[in-house]
Image 1 (cartoon, rainbow, N blue to C red):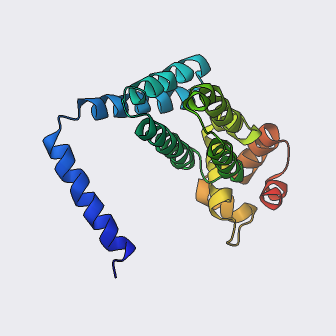
Image 2: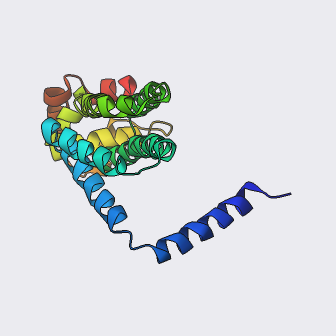
Length: 196
């Protein structure tokens, strides 16, 4: 009986052999277009992000086999959502809104049955990702101390955390951090910890 891992290893070896035979210039271009897409998303450049995703769509659309093209579009768009969630958590920290947005985008994409759905879906993907980026916590990341406060609180959700522990980790005075949190987040440090 073949295990999933055995199947993975077999498919992996087949892909490596296939890549060795082909020049993969298209794959390199696709990878570069994907990096441009994420760069535009994380810089909140909506029009440019849509243009980058349209380029990715056009590159995939060059596949002559209609069924394979649809399958590749579907897989790649799912991959983009996963990539977004991964980059989001690396850039900011874990956030329930990012996970919820990713799940919602995947659920929307699962209903797409035609190629044109993916072309029209460019707006859905970009808008969904940017809406997640523009939530209230993200705007506070302009201040590095607030950024650290949010990250520490997110990372310590299931561990004891209070104001003293937080300011000790930040290596800042309690009054300075309290003032910034109150100004930027509109609540005290202890209330923010409880809120999260």
